[in-house]
Length: 115
Length: 112
Image (cartoon, rainbow over all chains, first blue to last red; front, side, top):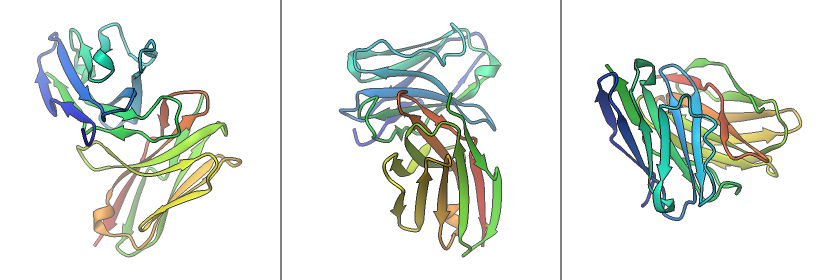
């Protein structure tokens, strides 16, 4: 596609429910990243994927968070048993490769509100 | 571990003024540095990307510089307009790493 697409744009969920956030990167981009931005905070790295390599999950805040990337394209970030502190904007980005000098292109984000 | 700092945290200027936003980073082994703009409730829009071998990049009224030896980057905005009001983020990519490390951002308000 022309840009990074994220869905849904907004999600309100009840505490304790599971949610899935979707990211569709730019076609041909092999590297995909998830970041989180809490209200008034900077961007917090969560996870990245590069091709078929094992993802770097070092930024995931707890084992309630997981992510998959199927077929080297679309990625899904899953949050189980959501908590109010999970409320944030979840941003996805892609780049041509992990180690290239290309910049990141971000999607518009998913605003998650846990009530 | 790379740390990125942006000063000031907020800036308010009258329309037409030229201004400079500052970004500093702790690890000079930086691969590239990217400036982004974020409007309220929106995602990030890439403005300029500077490779470690470059000194500056220009796009329209924007000019970004990179000085690896001093660990600094600046974003210069000429003839500011109310439409420039947004949060500006700088982010560095480490040489051996894979992720961008972001500063906290500078919230810019340009008053008509």
